[in-house]
Length: 411
Image (tube, rainbow, N blue to C red; front, side, top):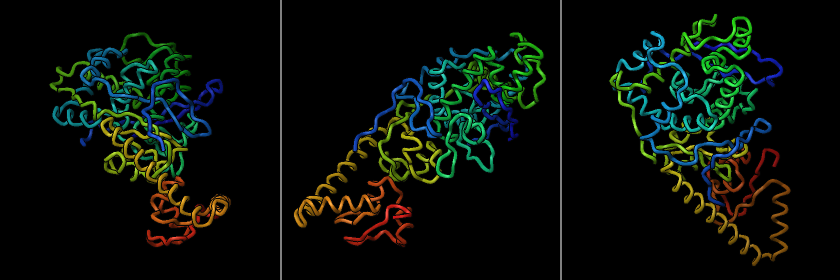
């Protein structure tokens, strides 16, 4: 993948940088309370570099209509507008069965992105942009390289208010990153007045594109690939985007069949009301840890931190199980805590129980009660089991009744 260049924008654009875009290979590789489903509403911007909530698809849509809806939202050139478009379209589909398998694999993410693009009134072609960037893979960022399915550079993420650190990478958070990129693309179009130039700005940087427009003027509708002095990688980026859009526009022309998926396979974003290990969340949803982690790759340390993102992306068919399991688990923990408190009150009197709770809160410790495990103690305090083990020098998971556990490094 070619590393894209970045350009700083004018001060009037409030340091909002263009997202990075590299080139993909010529031939794609094959390869408590109940949570609620997030309802579409106005976007809530990140605060203090924390994307705690974003608008995202709330419910499955009819996948049999998604392709027609997508075609209906296309606003750029068709297949025959330029030979280079057809050339790339044929490369993508030279092995029809492999192409169909790849498209089937990314279909849940594609439908998710398409709904957010529609919310921002962005040209439908850009719902296919992750195909060009990453084939919709949550590519991890390494040593300052672009990351996520949108291939966003760290400096761009910072300008867009995304949190990027060792525990959480907002570039890999599908709801927040997609919402931010669609808002950025819409602004590019509003500023430049042309979706082709919006794509150029995404790849090369808006400042560079504005400079070209000021020198050469806005391109006409023809040719479809504007003759402007951009780098080959930038021109090729637009060609690839129009090419995959061409295949979606006329799949029969390339002897491919576009896939459909069931409502249960479609992705939705679900609010969570507590932090928890990712393995625990996967267990609640009846999913493998790897599957849930792939959909929520922003959480880099195996822990769902609701301060970073208070939602999880999962197939809609898993939401009910997740909701019911989380409710039941929360009620069980509350019941255990109540029973333990009543037992302590009967033994020591109410004042002793209150004093113990106050002392525990003040000293950041927890006294192990009957039936408690490291797992439910960690969940109760929104901590990770390994953190508690490390702070208390524990080698295993066995606890003693009455054992006092530190709940922080300074406990």
